[in-house]
Image 1 (cartoon, rainbow, N blue to C red):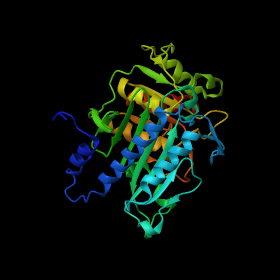
Image 2 (cartoon, rainbow, N blue to C red; image 1 turned 60 degrees about the horizontal axis):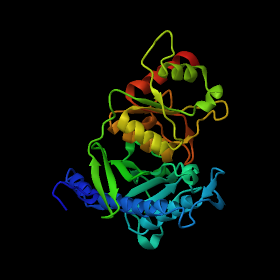
Image 3 (cartoon, rainbow, N blue to C red; image 1 turned 180 degrees about the vertical axis):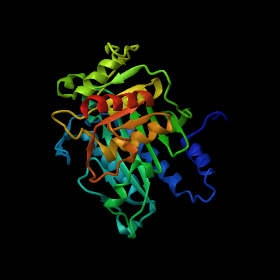
Image 4 (cartoon, rainbow, N blue to C red; image 1 turned 45 degrees about the vertical axis):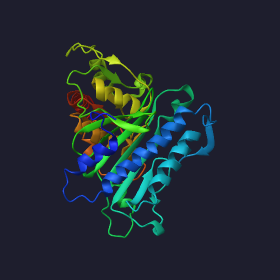
Length: 336
């Protein structure tokens, strides 16, 4: 391997050196997540051949039919991380309550929250899907973790990231020192640094929203989207191109690299929004801010919100800071 190739393991170790008192627990946790991503990636790549596609016959806590790959990804994340002694507790979008760590394995100082397979409705049509994760430090007083450890605001995050399973598999993460992307080389079985220090481009290209729900939006959101399209007569602008996949990881990843905004506002049917705060919005908000962007529920920063429930939902506006702040301005002006 050439000296210019940096594996994710080497990168994590280099990042650890920024913290002289580190014991390696956090670094090993991140590497465990990368291992789980490799296993999930292997199955997503051979899904049609291995009878993985289709429904598993079960329904998750949100009332959604679980895909077979959903279940596989959930089981993989738990199996890789529940016996290492690095975690105090876990929580998953696919589980009703917290996922305790078996006491015989010992509990550690960190908390792992994850969405094992975001965008799983796209599996059967071979569209990009992903895994989202967030890591906190344990704050509860007991030996092992509790629900309160999973209900911390995003401002307290230790790390966050996602894996996108598409034409290639890519892991993007931040531990508070920039955002870095790694592409999986299947021939080596290694994630290699391909996108160091990602920054959202200042000149945005895209906006991502489900335009089919426009009739349900508030006045402020409708006017804001018209502004993005360059159709606001009072404030004309160069229009952004519309791109919407319906997988938060995929839509966010494109806009992170190319510039733009993803929005899933509240509407008449979902007055509290639809994006999961703990499993989706908070981790992505942390990544966006580390890359120079911003995330809001339309009125306040996502990272300032302390979740009240594991499966709490929220509106989400995320991407270039100026675009998100403009959305807040339209909502203040027309929806107050």
